[in-house]
Length: 448
Ligand SMILES: Cc1cc2nc3c(=O)[nH]c(=O)nc-3n(C[C@H](O)[C@H](O)[C@H](O)COP(=O)(O)OP(=O)(O)OC[C@H]3O[C@@H](n4cnc5c(N)ncnc54)[C@H](O)[C@@H]3O)c2cc1C
Image 1 (tube, rainbow, N blue to C red):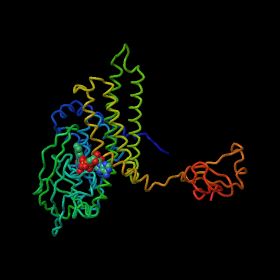
Image 2 (image 1 turned 90 degrees about the vertical axis):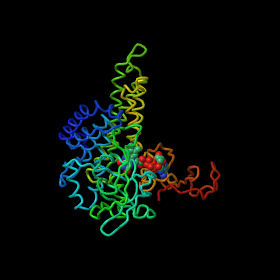
Image 3 (image 1 turned 120 degrees about the horizontal axis):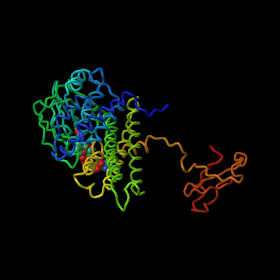
Image 4 (image 1 turned 180 degrees about the horizontal axis):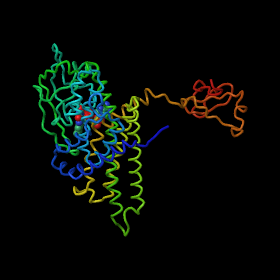
């Protein structure tokens, strides 16, 4: 039986994270946005609460939280500040390739430090000249005895400026494309690693984003997360886990915008009545509510698939582009409801609009998600309905009451071009509608 109820433990997790988000993040969210700065005391508190490493398996010192748990945490934090949520959540993407890989010694060495000593890890695939086209990366890894020598630049790296460890994807030979990609765990303090300045952004300004330069960095082979040829698939598997969480970000941001819009619509008067009494406003709010609900359901489905061991790739992409685009619409409409105030920096909507915009870009743009879903729909998915040229669009003179008897002994042909159905033992010489010859007709009855 399908069950959408949260367990008592999940309800308690939701309550605690909500309390933390409302008390400690929300009041300072605008200040840190304006300051363009990641507040370390909030990040430290989030670490202490287990919000930055919740899904590390228990055997490596983690809390072993499920993907559904992760979506609950993420929605609550993002509802208070999407920028801080990005910096809190990215840890999980940073260590996901390590959790998924088969280098157990590396897991034993690093995962407990992340889980228990609040060490931070970031995830680095993107570069100044490529983001979507992961197989086209240029950061280079050259084998040298027991080491790989790493050279190149990673860009847009969330928490690049505060991370202790970096999960770096690189290529042994760019010409090999997917087949050349490998991954390593690199420590920030190693010789040859330098961190760029915090990149100024339109929104999510409280999250740290930086470039990282690797110059002749010697990475011991023990720190290989994925050997050449295995890195691309590992990156994609990691995204399949993280994309539903971006959906959860979208649910949180959209929910906040809706809440503020409801409050405004109930208190603001125009033409002698509260805004909430006008159908145009009511319908906007209905659509916001619908989008928050449908988005949350899609996130939960993808998270549930992850938790029960079904490959979540498709649901992850669907939830990523549906939820993030729906959230953009919700925030935009919420701002509209607040009128001129909505456009000011003294109201919450403009920050939400700047913050939500990023969700359609990072961890695979909306276009990339559409490529994944259309690739599945057109390539793997097996349609259930018959092909159009086989469709038995038959007529009945008895109103279908005794259809089998009526059709017994009859033959029907369908024109493949215009769809005209011809009854008779042979196809017509020519279609009376489109003039195509009899050879254009296909027998559709009796069924083959
Ligand atoms: C604030 C922020 C934080 C980030 N954090 C991280 C991080 O922690 N780690 C990390 O590795 N990366 C990170 N990124 C990078 C992010 O994942 C990339 O920006 C994103 O994948 C898009 O890549 P791009 O910017 O190079 O755009 P491009 O790949 O150059 O694409 C540009 C545009 O063209 C479209 N496009 C590209 N190819 C096609 C195609 N075949 N068909 C149709 N349209 C196409 C894209 O959808 C996009 O709209 C972050 C980015 C930002 C802005």
